[in-house]
Length: 613
Image 1 (cartoon, helix red, strand yellow):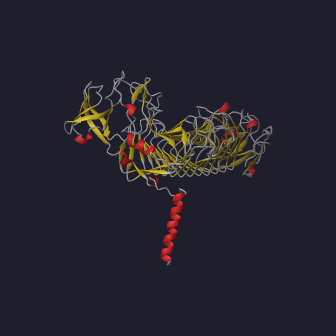
Image 2: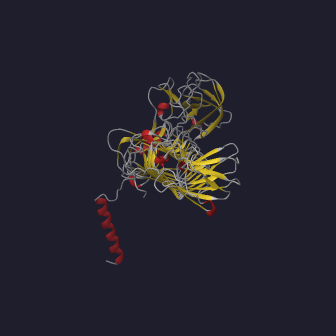
Image 3: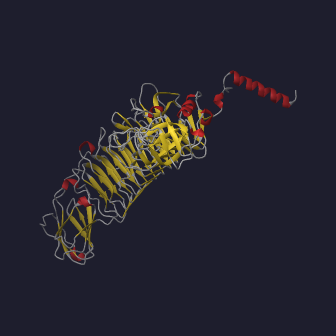
């Protein structure tokens, strides 16, 4: 037997063995499924200038180009459905006849007489996608979605008299191991119009992961556009529940993806790659099931033009994603989650950033690294959160970070939050500490940040302790924590302008350590007086000092007390003095004015503080 024959025989033997043991399946499952083979056609079109007559099935649309093969297609006409006391819900129907390019009849009569309405029509792709999903039987299957715009509406959205059953979900997924792949520009358009159910407006989620779920392999979506079908972008109507008369409001039924709780198993991984998510009236994606191990991986995805949050409650790794024109990047309720989360190198513009709640002491960490937040609200809000690392981010023309905001949901205080190596530009304050009681803050580290064009490094009115602010730089003012309650506050080695006192109307000016370690006398009334706030010694840590400079052309007295008692030090123009709070001593940069004054020493700081790491 020659070498060629021997190799051929060996190949046949190996192939026969693999077939015998099932290592290679001879069935269909080795070939990717294609939704067009199940009857899907991506032919969705937008209609404008639609005219309807109440109780009539006739529709006129001069701008359309209807053809005979449109019979059986699905049509959606906004504001042409059942009258709901204030306005009409959306009409969903099938095309029954085509009499001309602009005249059709449909399966359900209109509830309104109106002109210049808008709508959508195209092949009803719900059966095709449902059957393609049901045909996935291998541990890992692939569904191909060719270029086109696919219309996906749940069947029970169509009704003549009203909706007796909820229509929350269009495509149900009850197993993992399916990869949905878009080719070219592949758009999946969901139910943008609303109907009335139980006197509330309701739309439908496009995909639902519904427990029990089997086959714990990843669900993957790549190169796809998930469109909410609303035709317009960001509405920002946050009223809840959705009005059953107008359809307006934050629609908690309208997501591209939602998880639904139930008995039985779940899967652990949801993956999105190069996807666009747009035009949704509720959270674009929401984990309502509280799945502890479910982890979202999103890479190079765009979330835009939404009414609510882009992501809600998923533990995740977000990399290179863009978030724009919505209410907020995410709301993350952390109580149920067992995975560390990451947000890295993302771009967030025109919306609020990350809202964290449900935190508990020692919960899995959240690393927010290298992102750009611009032209929006706060970049980070907590109520409460724990184990958060906000590192090397850029925050421009937005608010900064807010700890302890309203809306507390959790079982602990805001704690173990580190903010370092970030750049803040144009925020009023880089860090604000707000909450009290259960929503207070502890072990907060804010260091090595650049803070530019701000009113100050920080402010707030909340209760906090173990707040460490150090090694920050920038052309900004003080850390204004004068109104905080009961905290141990460390403000050292910060290089910023400092608290400036003295203007054309203020005769008595008081420097307090709550303003930080720097103070400055500014041009003002020539007879002004300055003093040091000695009324809250418990808020002054051991070794604290304050550097005060006179940037005014005037010479001013500086008293050691808030009531201007005792012997003052005279500060000439350009002079700088350092005051040591614990023993009341001074050092001054001029030997001609080296007097020393003494104030009662501050009590020792609390002894149960966490050390600065």
